[in-house]
Image (cartoon, rainbow, N blue to C red; front, side, top):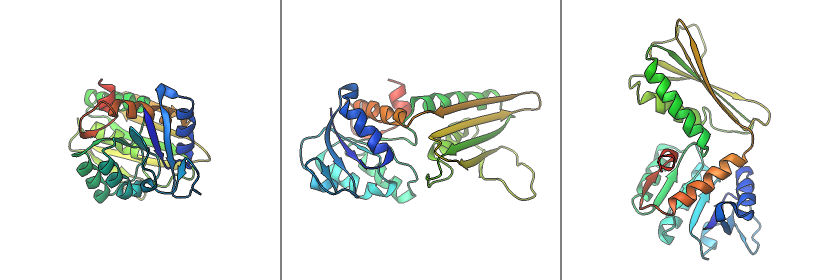
Length: 246
């Protein structure tokens, strides 16, 4: 499986490239692309500058990159793994449209551990319908979007069994907790890779579910696994749950 890494000079791009160069899951490097790059033999400033052989694209650049990424992928009929967060409605629409023409994998988090946490959180929300729910997400100080895409992913999973739930991102002022509310708090500390905690509390007990990322390598590993999965799929939009169900 020959992989184009888009956003190759970013933190995750570097982790991903290192993993691919170690031949993880049999992957090999087709090309590295980054807008900040000084072009070399295998490093390109734009996707359109590369027309060599490839099987799949993994994007760890920026959510706005879909405007260049998706037309390129569709034109070349290449499956694409989108591992960025913070997309606006227009960008999400572009992702859905592209998925009608090529296989697209889009997930707010590439960790199989987070997929497991989502499953547990959804089950707990169903088993304890009267529990108050709070999500606490912690990331490094350079993370731009808050709440994190993963925190929203967790909330959306629980809203499937609590369709009337209302999200409250950040809590302040003189106000009681609302009924059927899912609160999300965002912390930005030093170089924390990523920690997500789901707390469900009733009058008699509290359940705490937590996932902590020790290294960014886990996201790179998940992205390569997603690319491997995607290369065997028909056109359509896929996420981490589709891969877990295989």
